[in-house]
Image 1 (cartoon, rainbow, N blue to C red):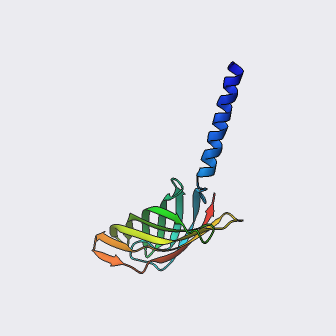
Image 2: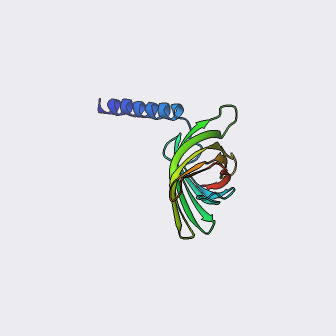
Image 3: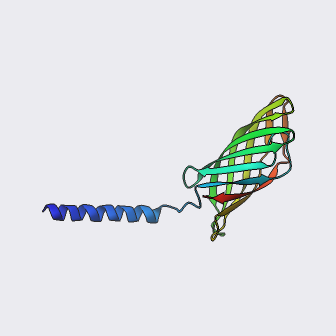
Length: 156
């Protein structure tokens, strides 16, 4: 009787695992780090980017901008949505904030982001194209819309 109970328990656990595996959408990647290139804005310029997925559709992205005589740090929360007609392509939207230190001036503000994110199938590479407008709130108030960028990240 004990052996029969263990077999039933094992079959239930295996069935549950298979069901979860089949029903769960595969995530494209979890962590990626690389570079972001684009025109320099008053706050966040070209620099380094890191992205970490919290689950299949929510990610955190950090950008370290180097240039314009200083350093800028930007943190973004992003929502990713697959594009069914193209494998490994997602569109995303997000929001966050930044702080920048430039030539004895500091800036703090809000940032939004919208873009496309593609993961190559055969190599550990992700590229994205995005528009990241910035609203400076402290130091001087201003809106910067010329912030299109392209990122290339190594997936690990």
